[in-house]
Length: 389
Image (cartoon, rainbow, N blue to C red):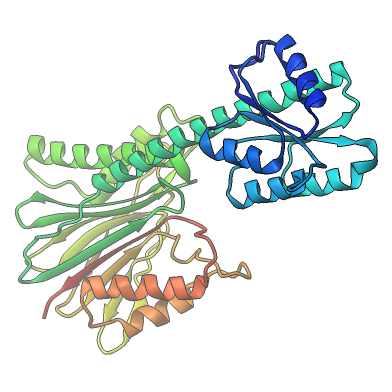
């Protein structure tokens, strides 16, 4: 295997040693080299130009190799530039100290040609592989950042639906760069709002792609039904259609829980279907929060032919309907304890009567306080729909 073009610095206070190393490197077709007779000169050269490898003698006058290595570590140069220490057999304890400081390897004196070739080659190959891995990671990070922005732009962030009577807010926080949560709010026809929130099993890119598929099928299918039939479907009908489509080409049985409702903005009536999703909460003053429990239906994508059930609820003036994914309840603290539903209900009750955005801010802050710095366990999505008094 040919080595990539490499710039190498040889540091040794003995001219004969430097000459021997440089001749050995030339035999390896490594001709882009520089040399330094002491540690100070080596630091000056390293600060002036990048090197792919440094062969550094341990024992030198004025500034020895250990001091040079410590400075290189403090300046953060060892991540990009491997250093191979040169040592006599009697200096092995100092070599161990150098390895602990971040040296890549060491070469014993007198130089063995085969060992010198092997260790130089190995150090350069590892540096090359680290560089490739870093570039791949940077590319992947950039792509995931773009994917996160695109996913967040898929869900609405402005809710001007009859603002004199309705106050609506939503937030979505993936645990990773992208996630499997989704929500959507849009007018199916004037005065009727589609309200949906879902949670795809799993995290990351596979869940995000399944989330995008689910949202596209939901919005496209519902709007097309209204356009062709001239009437609203029942939420259970839409759930059944989505279930059939999501069950196709799904050998891994990836599933999504979904709360799907049609809200009449005039009366506050919400017809909905709950396909395995977290129960919604009703918040009403003073300081009251309750789950809206309905018989459980399975998630979408599990049982291809299933008759889902419809339910109704009225949002009264002054009440808030709070929808969430299970990531809120799955929030964990440093001890691995989950934020259970009783705590969520208690916190939600304290927020009854506040605005939709204030409700979401209060819940997310309570979850953040409970987590106490623990990393996110799952995606968290919240949707608050408040009917104004």
